[in-house]
Length: 278
Length: 278
Image 1 (tube, each protein chain N blue to C red):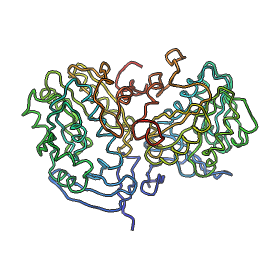
Image 2 (cartoon, one colour; image 1 turned 60 degrees about the vertical axis):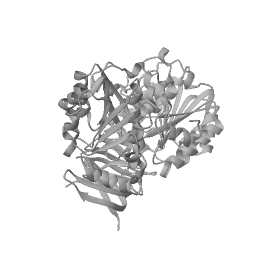
Image 3 (spheres, each protein chain N blue to C red; image 1 turned 180 degrees about the horizontal axis):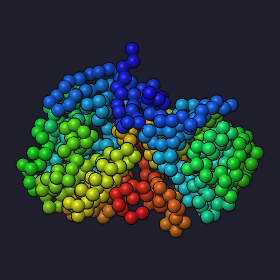
Image 4 (spheres, rainbow over the protein chains, first blue to last red; image 1 turned 135 degrees about the horizontal axis):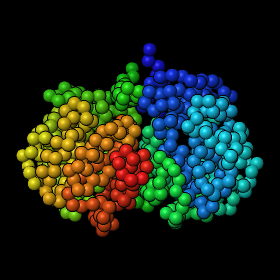
């Protein structure tokens, strides 16, 4: 018998992932949480039928959503990850020598439970001395922590279900309040091909709130539309002025300092999409 | 009724493309040739059930496989495209002021026939005064044209079916003979995630034949594994030394000269894969 996870990317495209084994499947208060073993990408966290992180490619996303803002900041000490329950972003943040505290605020305790048992590659961070695992609503959490963080990473699932409120201007404004005066927000903004309206909206919202807004790119093959994009809002530091070669080297599978320099280079159609000059 | 094209990427992953309309479907001497309208990426050329080029994203591949080698060369005048029957690479090559002649050697006349009628976005190049459409076997063609071309682009379908012989050392050696003494070979080398052995083999083969071998990257969302890679073998010119900002600007949707500089930056796992130093 072949077991297939059919993941719908949009009306015209869906993916059939062959599943070798279902390791965990429970309904939480927020979503259906599953850990499966995919034939082609290894173990994976699946939320409401959407692949969130696989052991074969999670490193691209987790390294890029973390190292780019952390290296843009001059001296990040306190980092907040909103969502990111698999632990991958926290794992990467803890690698920075300057970082003293990583608060990972995941709304769904079942995600933590599932990843702790079945995704040790990412959940290894839960027990790191720098990392605090917090199971609370990120929206309320940032409101309760004004002027606290150097970097806040919004590591959310897609803008449907529990994560939808993490994709609007009001939330980016709350995050701004929770950042210190030289703080940086980083989030992903989905696919250059399938989610162009979303990218435009996020870029415009962040740009209206933060003095410096930068977009960057890194393909994550298991994410819908594949050409994955990220947006940073920064109160003070501009990655275009970062002296990246003077920074600490991190042990990583995707990231290196040349990648830092290259990731901000945008194709013409993307510049046009977000209103930057060709 | 929903009509679905099920494209198998590997044993563990297949894609369901919703088809709005089948515009052309014929069996040629080499393969099944079809033009369909995909709900999510527009009109597409499909060969033996594999999506080759869609109007929504062909520009990424066609611009990158063409402009990168052409701008690496100091003065490309004669260009050969092996395969590339949709015409997209020829369209891009013809944009270069220095280029006087683009020979497009496509083995399958039915591909030409189908694209001429249903994919004007790419086949527009067929009637360009610089472009010669040749329907011959590329393997024999390069043997018959020693010391002729400045740049040869291998724009083939996947390494199954009629294209399989375009992916081996013997063919890269033939191409070398067909290049002038300062010529450049460019080919695609498929996905960083799904085709690692192939990438390793192509890189090693090219590297054993050409003094300068460079790999570069550009995601094409409709290609299997999505993180698409390209390899160049060059007899004389090194793209790392190209003064790209002094070159002609081409009108393009993806490519710009900053992309030229960024595209050669490789993630750590890719460097490791092809045997480059981290």
